[in-house]
Picture: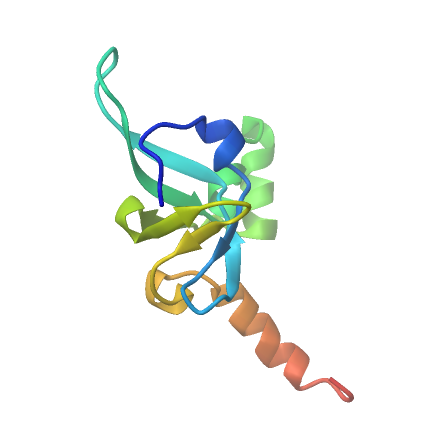
Length: 116
């Protein structure tokens, strides 16, 4: 069961995301927090994808990194999180949440290789 309070940096960031069918579908690259300064804060969403960390790179490298890695990311609403353990478990399928697209595309390419 999800906890009411925990250290986001230690318990959530960089966790692997696993959907309701047990499929690995990304990592927690960042979180979106709702609340006013000095007031209570609540987790609103998990952000996953290269577009999240490209924005954290030094400004001169951002454009290059976005061209190489892409600048898109997926916002997974916090209500889609089932549990947080050694990984972050999601309710439902990753495709329904917009996750796992890169794996699906890579799988189609790899599946065409001889002996794959």
